[in-house]
Image (cartoon, rainbow, N blue to C red):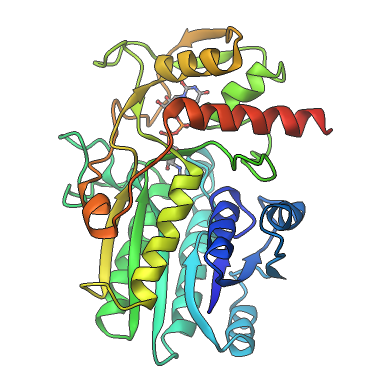
Length: 339
Ligand code: WQD
């Protein structure tokens, strides 16, 4: 069964390709290599022994998207990761984000709408909830006004998909991720942030390797366990496995609605200082950090109510925070030592 993974050479996409191949799906990867490396294909092959078919396509090119789906007319499902995802950049360059994240989604859905049946998994984000009033966050928690153009593109994407599933033969599942971290245990693939990492865990591992002087902890005056902000850090392999389960749900026609939504997290919140402690424990080294003012746009605390994914998908995270951090650290050491 052929599955298309857009953004399949990216962080979450590549880990999902591995899990799809492990389940004997035939995988076709689309990526424009704007935020990923072609070498990831070899990493995937070293893990699974199978090199996915790859096409370098920019999904903003409508004709290229049409040509792709005409050529691959036997696609059973699409898992759509391809998108720009830097919150800060989206504030400075909103039109880049609306074009890349929204227009390209429309082009893909236009092609799927032509098929007798289509299954679509959308990479969404807990960012659609903003700073929810009540923790943990369930799928029924109201979506709030987006805090950034990036977050808005995810909300708009969800709305587009909702509208299209009502009037077409497209079945869709929206997966709202919390904070993906870690790397495949083989250390053959992992997170490859370009430039200075915006996200906490890659900044920590680069600091651990001496690439960064010190971690800036954005605020310790939040109303939380230790004053630092709280997030739900989910191992990327657990996240990848959830995508395969969601896809199987659609291709096996187990979905109860044409559009379903699932939060994907551990269900546990961890503060920045708790993540630092976990790193120090797994690495055996102290992490230099300084407390600095809060980062604009950060929310106090976000973590998932995972009941629906646990009961309806039959999926639950397997890895602990320390295991996830240890896998990120192993990957960082491998990447730096091989340069
Ligand atoms: C985590 C925590 C920071 C860096 C982002 C996106 C979200 C999703 C996940 C795509 C926060 C603190 C961070 C640093 C710090 N991405 N921090 N020093 O902001 O929760 O979510 O990634 O879907 O859309 O917004 O993740 O890793 O940037 O921050 O203190 O150098 O670590 O304040 O509390 P975030 P993050």
